[in-house]
Amino acid sequence: MQKTIYIINGPNLNLLGKREPEIYGAQTLSDVEKRCLETAQSHEIDIVFAQSNHEGQIVELIHEAREKAQGIIINPAAYTHTSIAILDALHAFDGPVIELHISQVHKRETFRHHSYVSQRADAVMAGFGTHGYQLAIEHMGMLLNK
Image (cartoon, rainbow, N blue to C red; front, side):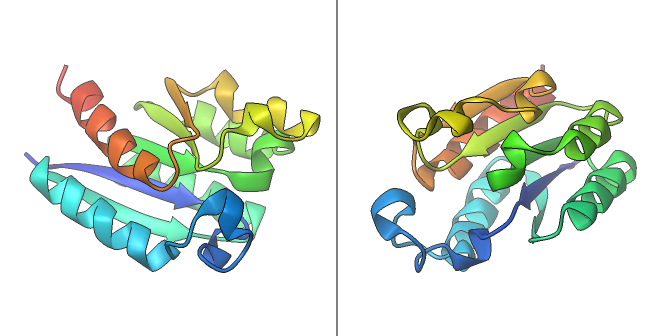
């Protein structure tokens, strides 16, 4: 049976490729989604790829994943550092969770060094650029096939 993972992207990631390309690169979120679909297909994984600028909608996506997915890859963006609601929703999810950041957050402003999401994540990836999404899918495949 093919496994399903949710790839959830937080605020401002819809501006990928336009916003601070020196930090986040030139690829758009649509480019990232295409590469994720290719990578997932090669690992026999179905993905639901979503982005929201709204905390409550991200919580709803995590709730939906409880019923439909075996794993979650989440780039919570700025909500990484502020959202106990997202952390609580992730605690209600039984499968593996990978926290993903395009930039190396520990080389940036001090407030970015704290992550609520890390308290639930089974793995944290940061600083791989948008290639990190492909690496996270590969790692998720390994976690789901243990």
